[in-house]
Image (cartoon, rainbow, N blue to C red):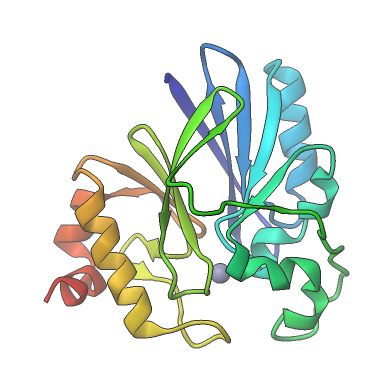
Length: 210
Ligand SMILES: [Zn+2]
């Protein structure tokens, strides 16, 4: 696979949305759906003549799913333990939001597959709970969309309902032992990084490996 990844930040808490493009087939996937991303995704697909195949959700916190319902024309994938927030988004926002998030009631579950075929993509799935119950990382070749599991220099918070620090530390350990050092990581907030960089400079990775 010859993959190109485009990213843009949206919404009140600066959540990253990524479009992965298979250069050879022009198929593409969207990763996470923050508030306001839909028009960027649709316009990019039109401009670059891409076939949008699916929306992949790293987890179901509202800042990653606010626009999810606008993608009802394509399959929406999530890991089952996180589906409840997708079905009743306004019940789990944590604090009142000045906008309404529409529910998604027909998401497809990633299931027990470690490898998924979506359009022309082969996606390797790594379950990394801890930030939420059903958080996952999606690997496309040398690129991994990690959601809020790990950030450049930090990790996802675990103080929200469904979060668990020890579980997250196990997931961080799994993440850095699964992917090669040169693997590019695309977090849900902030800049991209690599496994190698986080092994060297992320105190949470050091702690997880103790
Ligand atoms: Zn989150």
